[in-house]
Amino acid sequence: MPDLDPLLGYANRTGRAPGRGVRALGVVLPGVRRVQGTAAPWADAWAAHNRRALTTPGRRWVVLGDSMSQAVGASAWDTGWVDRAAASLADDGLPLVVVNLSATGARTADVVDQQLPVLRALPPALGTDAPDLVSVMVGSNDLFAGGAVRDRLPDEFGRMVAALPRGAVVATLPQPRTAAHRANAHLEQAVARGELRLVDMRAEGPSSWRGRLAADLFHPNDAGYAELARAFVPHLRAALQA
Image (tube, rainbow, N blue to C red):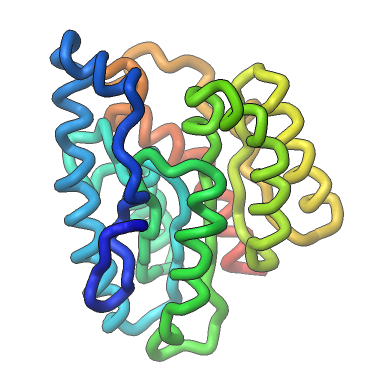
């Protein structure tokens, strides 16, 4: 079970320890150890931010996902793609109150079983009747876990797609893996039915990660997160203006 927070009942953690592969790499590679060392303080910073956000009036943006939405790999917890996208939308006259429910290490099932229940339990946004904007980027941890977890990814992605609120903005998985293709098919079908909005990371994500990776050579650095924000912003803007 995830750690408890007195307001949300959730503290941006899955309750699951890092996998053996990550732990082993952290022993021998300082870059991995350094980036992984930010996961807990970044989660604490977001949990504190979320408590403040629930008392801040304005239209709300609820972020679901994994370490990519926690900004792990960035120079600070608030320099990832979420904050960059929020700043860009505010410059366009679309300010948002961000509630970030993502968690490092989260898999697709964690979005369904941990994060979506918290989303549903949130009190109404203050000072507005506008519906929450919801975004999701998840699935890479399922793929890299391998074995049964990767095999279950398409079904878990389908379960997530069916559970998301209408109009949610969801990123595809860009990895050229069979499980990713099958997972993306669930999303593409929901988009065709007009239920969700798609950010196609296969076409809209970074054309190259050269110079855009953190010291662990897995998570984005600030430049990489700027590219993710660039991909998301047009779709977030369209959802807000719909």
